[in-house]
Length: 491
Image (cartoon, rainbow, N blue to C red; front, side):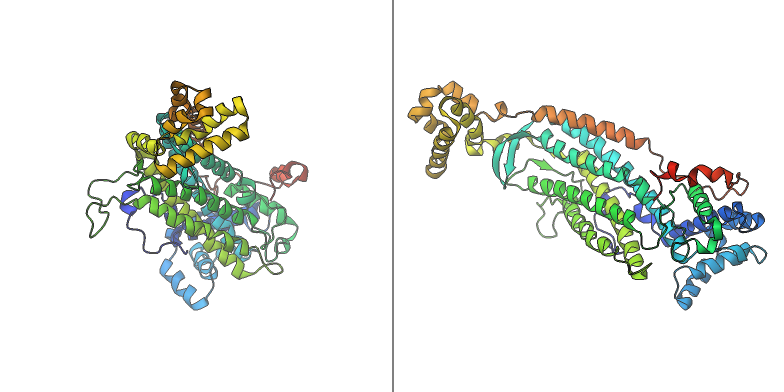
């Protein structure tokens, strides 16, 4: 993987999402053994290998039963990503049955299917993280739904919003990415079991039966064409995670800016004892927000190599396969680390309503110019009203004269509205639109989404380690093989 190999100094401030642990060598090798076991059992059901051998293979498919040092040494000598593991696995199974290990499969059938199993666990971990982030965001949006602050476009005061509205924007994007992740299922969680070129030649006429049997045991989907050059489902995962990283990076950028002393409106939680600077003891640096910016850039940069990995020449290219293995693992780990930090920020974000009110007042009422222009426009026409308010605002800014004083002195404006009406029209708290309503609506959306995600099991059971389980026979696979019934689920 290409993510930070030495970790980050902020790791002590965030919970371990556990995604990186999924991509350890041992866990990935266990996933490969799970695939080998599922393959053997499916082949036994299809009559391709002896049932007794398949049971022996399934019962031995545990990483602790293998000599890992032997595999590592053999890998260095053979320079092959899978053969040494297969040879050690066959040795552990025993001479009577070990010869049936890996029957008819090619390396990528096992490695890619195993990687999909690991990615599925990572996918579920990320969804559970999103559930927690959204639950915290819902509380934050609800609590600040009516808290006025300056809306900013192009880094300038625009119109007033509420902080809850700002959180609603975050929620909307996070929910959209969550839904994108959920919709990946049929395209991402697929078994690659077509043999050397994807034609099932090594499985005789039982290729589709074996594929369906492996898919059933692993909880995956079959593929329409089990070609080794078809990887768009995994690529799509990386692209969705890159989009998620864009949104999380935007949130980090917002918090980073609001923590500046010139703003001082919101602060990520800073535990006691946290050091901001080695030379400036007063500093309260936005460490986690900075992490989000760094990780967002790293993850978004993985979108290009993920797309590059689709350029297989002919039926397979090992360089493209290896590229996507690294990219997808790195993207998943980075996403987990980002969400861990976002959860801490969202759960403990500190708001300063007084500074928000003070910052709104910096323009001395000019932040209400749109409200005034529209009200005036009803009397004299929009464009003429815009020109008048524009000129008054420019004079107020240029000569440092109170906006309200100039409005009262203007013959046209002062002739249409009295002072009480003018004060109301430029009052930021009176021009919040549907900010509060939108914040409350999105808080509810976040809660409903969180509750749905929390019901997703953390793991999908792999049905390979109980050799006594009922076989999935040819007749039992009839529905899986019927194109009319599988059109919507076959990859």
